[in-house]
Amino acid sequence: MKAGMIGLGAMGIGMAKNIAKAGYLTGVYNRTTAKAQNLAEELDLIAFDQPEELAAIVDVVLICVSADQDVLAMIEAIALTIKPGTIVVDMSTVSSDTAKQAAAMLAEKQAAFLDAPVSGGVEGAKNGTLAMMVGGYANVLEQARPILEAMTGRIMHMGPTGSGQAAKAVNQIMAAGINQAVTEALAFAQAQDLPMDKVIEVISGGAAGNWFLQHRGPTMTRGTFAPGFKLALHHKDLLICQSMAKQTGASTTLIDMTIADYERLMAENYGEEDISALYRLKTEIRIEN
Image 1 (cartoon, rainbow, N blue to C red):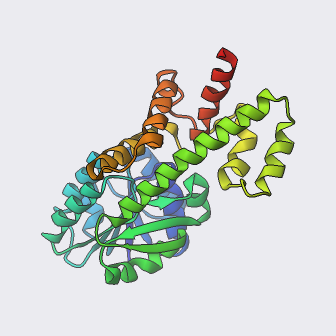
Image 2: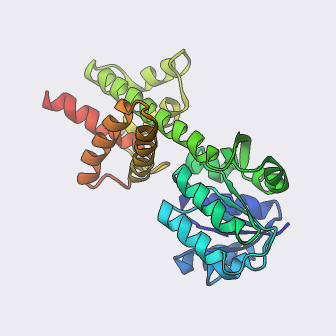
């Protein structure tokens, strides 16, 4: 199978390298052409000038872009040239409704669609250990699985189209809660004049231990917020979660609080930092009090 990758952001570039390492990647497309050209030269691939050129020659189109409108724009473009039987796998984080719309557009061209958002951050994309939540037909997933396994540590079929995005929404809400808990707890520890490295080490080994504490605790308490998952992107995802929750009457308390906190930080130009920049707000509140 020949695969093509659309979208070479912080996540997409790691995914592309792992797919290329497995021998499946034929070419790449990115709106910033220099990024595509540089990666193509590094991996000895084709850098396509337009997404429809990529779609015309591959068996599997992989997409990883930032927002709903970007996904639909790429689907509209590749639908111009896509071959019947081609599989499109969208790994962006968008709404379930967008996934269903994309699937319908491709069905008209006799192409299959999987909504397959991922979790694991930049580290997971680089190391090929992402967790993937997939919506769509199970038999289509099995056809694409060898390619997807090149960049994941776990693939879970969640149900029909849109189910992958719904599962990713669960992940994003939970990530917000973990961020709130860890940043507030470590701000409390700092206020108690505790040795922060020891606090992180001992709690990481107990019942409250988690990946975010272990990997982001040391950096946030040193005032370093290099993006593994950009705060502005999580904010965008939580707006999607908020909309989905309101459609079903689900609670949005945690979502609403985190969106408000992120908007305060974005207003201070911290949107490009890691979501652990929420620690700035927690320590600021302590100082203000």
